[in-house]
Image (cartoon, rainbow over all chains, first blue to last red; front, side, top):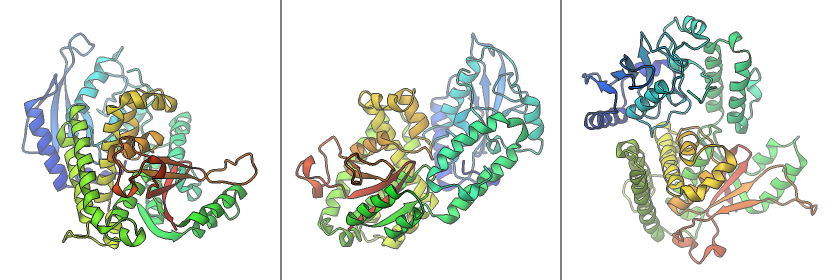
Length: 161
Length: 314
């Protein structure tokens, strides 16, 4: 909530670096089921492979999540988007932006990359239908200037999916 | 939200919620960019008006706020005047309870605390720091047993303990009153301490889920866990009696909340209600030993619907 757009481009603070290194170790020991993170030397951007859960609409499909950490992570939420092509889902826009409260207003430093992944997979798994959000075209058009989803004022209206 | 000039401090969070709803009605007409910009402008304005923790002001500044307002409130402020000498305001950013608690606690436990409240002796400060440190250790164990990964909370715990040590007089790195104020206003310290309290509060609520459940059900439909995830752990979520009870119990620090609202009693005269949050554990600061009936909390917070400030007793 306190994140101006520029913050995500600044280098990580010392606390953020330390925290991410610990998260990385934890991920390597205990990765969330269905996710693969190819460790690179870029601590500030993680690219994570997501496999749709068996028995759901997204079974046997693979997507990529891009997680960018701001200077003041974990006080500030990371920016999480799907690298297009994004899964067809009522809360996921074709530009990869995800409408999920924990990524914005309800973010807390008590959460981790791993817990975000689990929430996103659960959101995918509970979807009853493969379709884009109703306002997809308008939203994506408004984002053409390369805006971060963290600069969107999300309205979380649906707690079923 | 065109009248941002008039946005009262203490109503900030509520007005944001209502914005969300009204936005939905004409969602198509409003550009997100505009809304975000306007919101950042409001926040910037807030920050300019008031730091996280303000300067100490005489109680008359409170009365001045209601000059042309409710006569009941003015009467109540007169009553407050008999017991309290000053007020220190905190920013209305949803973290005001935790921020007020942080500042009052650290200040009163610090060097200057002895001058403000004679009965908190320097010799007892070490004892108090040890007591709180023990309680903080217990909170850490609680979080671990609830399944929180240690790396999610350890930085926040370390930073709080560092602040606690730094207000000790015999500590060579002991800080002054001004330094404490600066730290409380420095986002990188202040927000971390607030988040420490949020962890402690959440851990206590979840540990005693059965006790807190009925109170939480009275506020929302959420389960205890959902409540902690959505209303305790995120920054900027306002505090209620559930949060205050949990924090007071977990740290073993009594808190008095004085209510300034428009309610009046039937008997005619005006009185000011207060509620004392007394830790359940029987683990209390040594200055307040002697049974619950004699406890007089040294942390006094003024509550106006949606907001907490610090009060200074005479």
